[in-house]
Image 1 (spheres, chains in turn blue, brown):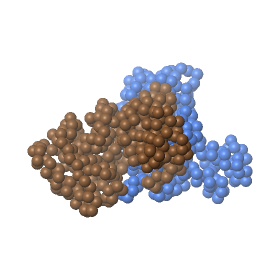
Image 2 (tube, helix red, strand yellow):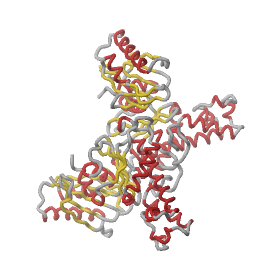
Image 3 (cartoon, chains in turn brown, yellow):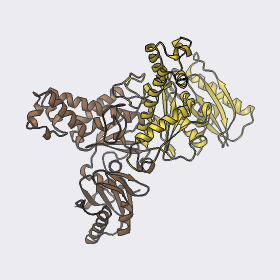
Length: 314
Length: 314
């Protein structure tokens, strides 16, 4: 049996054919054309999928799973809203089904990512998993009691918009103090810049070629390794934010494992080791509380395609 | 079929026999005797249950469900820790089973409460329900995708110990900034006292007979209704805290309904109306986000017995 996984990101559209072992046996990409109507975009995606199946003589394709960076409704199959793509009320599943005659399912990108990690990645054999993707925002994926938890209409698991500080930093979602305003790559970049502006002597300046526009989510970690005091402070603060957010999710879900994905997760044990230390010191639940492990996601750039394909697997 | 529901609170031990309609057909209480070993206490509970069944000629008793205010392990059936009762590693289910030969199950008290509300209370026919009990602490109960979610070993759903303010008020659990330090009855009492100390002219003083020891979770609401400015400020702040905590759980779980129980929930629509207003103004999820309702729990003092009995119903 084969599964089509479609990964609709903010910038790119990636399509892969996935087998039952979670291997991508072929893939292709499409460019977004914002000049054509949104429905036409999905129609041409359907046609490309048909062509790809035909060209490769694939048989036994079970259906199409869609991982979407926007706000989706898993029941209707619509993308209700995507700020990046400027989509509103787009019947993705309906259009794909109409033009391919294949079964279709859609889910939020972070939800697909956790499903992929559970089925074929680092979280195999776990029953309760919380995934955080640390990128532009913080995406949340919940795999609870052996299945994806998405909430009413698939609109739950917005862990990036869980409260971190009552009345804290303003968030694009309209609330104040959301977790992603402290723990995303964007937050780290913003905090790095702020620290640089206050500390002209920091190595960070040299490292960024004396241009704030060159600050990314990696420089603070790099300069911290080179013992720059300001960078160490920025990194420690970021890790403290992230750890207390993780601790929060431990107390809410008591999962067996927390999976970290997204750009910042490339820091691997520079990230997981100090987080585990803080968790160990502060894990709520008195005696006998099960330890929560912290692992780095494994599927990387293929997480969207593989996770989307998993939506159709049982 | 009949079910025994045991409600182990911090102060009292209540036992009820519950039928399939969720009605308590008989009940009795026991006093805690802290002078006898913890195992003996549970053994005498088992013997009392046997006697009660015999006296009433009950047949078809399916088993014993236990709602426990402490930290339990749903897998082993132990109460791992109860600060109030001074219990450590107490094999509640094992001892009850040994002396009654009945099936036994245990769960945290707030988890039992949400189960009772879903089966026989205010949350019938809902699929995703978050319950908060606003008492000494804030208890959390999660009913997700049509079943109780308890996390690894039944140690999840500690919503009172979810993060509300990073590095905020110190909590008895060892963390800082836990939600219950802002939204529990105890927090409201503490905030009421603080406001009184700063405002000697407030009606609150007269209402409490000029004695801070008389402050409870009701006085601020009472004086707010009488238009006392200080009381209004205390109540508004409390409701703001509670609302943003609820909003947080909306974004994490996207439930259909939030149920409020515990002492503070006696304020009924004085509580739910302003909360709903704040939710409506700030509910995350862009367009088409399903509205989350806020309801007051219905089972009241019987929630523990009925919820515990529900542990054995399918």
